[in-house]
Image (cartoon, rainbow, N blue to C red; front, top):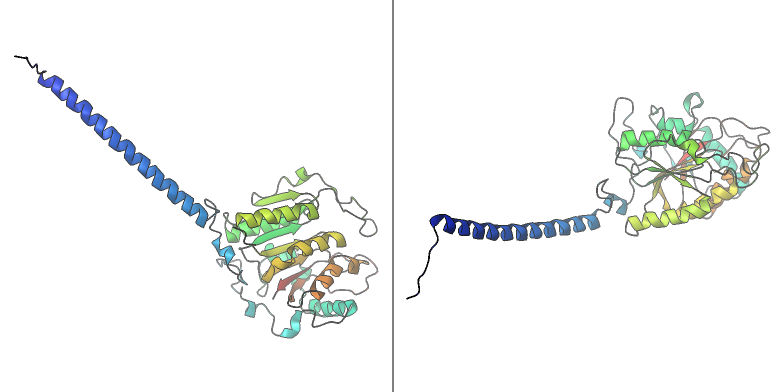
Length: 329
């Protein structure tokens, strides 16, 4: 007869323990793999739905931009952000190509509109928008959409808009993009401002806020690829431009900006021209681009937000205040 040997109780317990440990280890590994698979699938689906995961949900860019921003009122600002309250009472205060026949008429019309929207104490439009938000009838840019500045130089104005955006739109909102060749003017502009004037090393703007992204190069070379990347990021949806600061000075540069961005300007977009008026050759540069663009777009309408000084039709010398701010309506 074959003998069967049984181990001690301690040996049997050890065998059972090893078996149970191996069994539960296998179950645990399978559970972890299933959990990680589910987590990866959820993360993938979330990324598809919200491509800006970890920053801010940008699906609202698929909808039309609101005419007013979503800003939490505070003690330093008035709560009059809505279009009916910004001081525009009639169609006669708009600017469109129905209101003029030629360039001379356009300049006369703009002069009249500016005269009714002079800012208190000669305040610059950029300051009225972003430094001293105390004017009850000043509209502010929407936090949504693209904020773009063309002509950064030392970064003074882009710092104002970026700091304002971080404060009132939140640190997770989109950055303010600043475009500049940092090689100065591409062509001669006016007396004492030849080609290459304003040349500056981009390191001189290294102090700009964190929510500023600089794009170095000529606008016509950098803006198309920038817009292509932006559209790709938002699943081929073209985000509108809700704040546009044109400080390009010369005709060629301003023309490139409007040629590439014109279809992204929507009701509620804020446009600031830094050198629109009040110097001897103003009607050959930014002003001319604005006239040409409006003349070729029947449905494009503007209202003047404000200017520091009246517009002079035939200035014989440079007047310090040359900027004008508009809102698309």
